[in-house]
Amino acid sequence: MPPSRARDQQDDDPPPPPQLTPYERASMDMLDEITRILERQSERSGKSHEEDMAERLRKQGPKEFSGTSDPLVAE
Image (cartoon, rainbow, N blue to C red; front, side):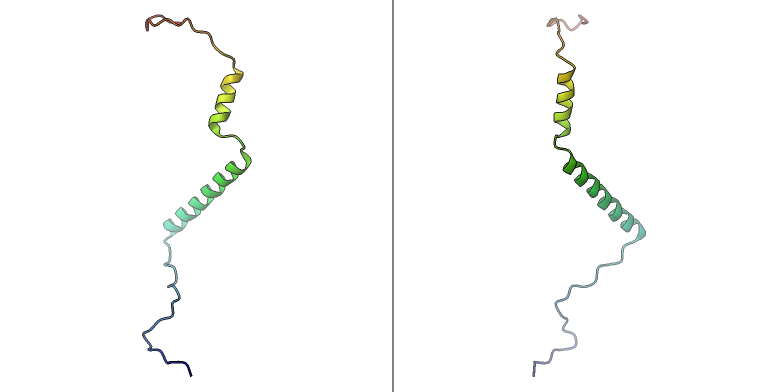
């Protein structure tokens, strides 16, 4: 026969999660959706935003500047 346990001794089961307020539930839902959006963006985008911007600037072609050090001279 197994040893008897005292009534006040609990199992090691965790307590149930607390009930969330509507505001807390909406916040959790919003964070979940933002996480899903960011995960989808990272999956389909092979290049980072910075790489894309650098590529767009390169396609515009190099600009030529006069190279003066006088800040009052406009180009």
